[in-house]
Amino acid sequence: AAAAIEEPIKPKVQVEYTQLLIDGKFVDSASGKTFPTLDPRTGEVIAHVAEGDHEDVDRAVVAARKAFDEGPWPRMTAYERQKILLRAADLIEKHNDELATLETWDNGKPYAQAAQIEVPMLVRLIRYYAGWTDKIHGLTVPADGPHHVQTLHEPIGVAGQIIPWNFPLLMFAWKIGPALACGNTVVMKTAEQTPLSALYAAKLFHEAGLPPGVLNVVSGFGPTAGAAIASHMDIDKALAVYSVLEVKLAFTGSTSTGKVVLELAAKSNLKPVTLELGGKSPFIVCEDADIDQAVELAHFALFFNQGQCCCAGSRTFVHESVYDEFIEKAKARALKRSVGDPFKGGIEQGPQIDSEQFEKILKYIRSGVEGGATLETGGERHGDKGFYIKPTVFTNVEDNMLIAKDEIFGPVQSILKFRDIDEVIRRANSTRYGLAAGVFTKSLATANLLTRALRVGTVWVNCFDTFDAAIPFGGYKMSGQGREKGIYSLRNYLQVKAVVSPLEKPAW
Ligand code: ADP
Image 1 (cartoon, rainbow, N blue to C red):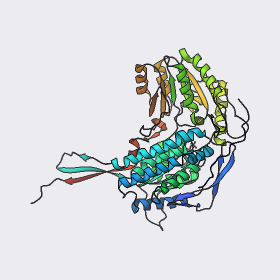
Image 2 (cartoon, rainbow, N blue to C red):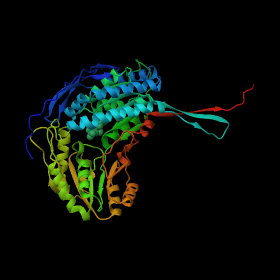
Image 3 (cartoon, rainbow, N blue to C red):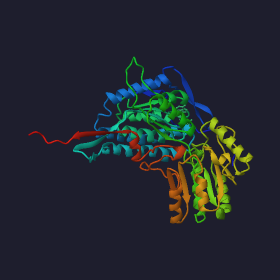
């Protein structure tokens, strides 16, 4: 593999939007401050972006509350809301290349993946939830007494949403799709590493006819703008006495930050919180699995998106009878993985998101070596600039090693050997996480047994990372609370109101 990275390819798109999007307008931050967003291929500045903080979150919440309480959004017919969301999806589809370019530039993911997976999935998600707008309704409930009882499913109000940097546009879609479909308004904080694509996409929603204040995007940092959303209590009393007791919070990020966010929400106003957090997902290769297919999917499960997936199959459990063959092939596959400029065709792996993640991953690699795991390939930076790391494979990994316990969030595959099914169930489940699992076997009985025994939110059988707008996603244990996507995400953004009235015989 070549050591040096060639001169980075110049993106064909200009950065158009760098301000905060509040009440339908691009505005500077109240402080006037900006922060640089970096190109992970080089560490150089792409653009300076307005840095939102408490005051900006307050402004955004005022706009969102007004759009909810007085504005047309929750009052429009569902069909009108649907048409706006569908128009937005059409516009996003039309601007696929611009959005994909911003995504690759800011995040470092291979362009083909941004253009052929991420943006199309954003479009699909918005169309899926547009389809729900006019199908949300309550029930007529039988009661013991002579009462007419019905439930109304109402939007909650202002949704605060905090998203990470690994799939900036997809996370944007998972959050706003159901929130807007149910008639809520949104204040979103994007990740400080990747503010660009969501601003562009949000602008397209406004072009599609979204009323001002319905979708506000505040770029900024976690402990300032993020914490301001999580702990939001009330708006500047001089402006209004809006109570934001009904703010709903949706967060995706690491488990440790999730705890902080939940604590802030509890300490402020008990706003309900949905959390999608970290994982250490097992990928189990049974003795009867098709080994070539299992090697390829285990590779994909871990290395996809530079290893920066919360559901990455980061503990590859392989049955002892196929272990030697598997590790030979897994190592050969990792060696073949093409690493380089994500704008270049045929590249499978770009740089990690930033220097912090880059250093963290290298630290985990050192701990793997020091802990006694066998480093089969990789283990160091790729090239001499940017945040590239060589695809890394460890074998002879033991359950108690850090690389088998912590979420590394990088291109580091840890392969563990197992002997029987009860053992692998116990070991796969002995983690604080429970996001996903992969199961590889030709036996229906084995697949069924494992599927039921694994304490995780998603089990992929003979496949991995199969995502769909309709398939729910979320974690058991410390991988999160609640589910996103599909019908399940609607619950996050709806209140249920029970309406009871006596059934009486009229006097006439
Ligand atoms: P990652 O490891 O993916 O960067 P984080 O959990 O740190 O995970 O970040 C996910 C999101 O949470 C980002 O938008 C980040 O800015 C935000 N965030 C980080 N710290 C806080 C905090 N104290 N309060 C609210 N949001 C935060």
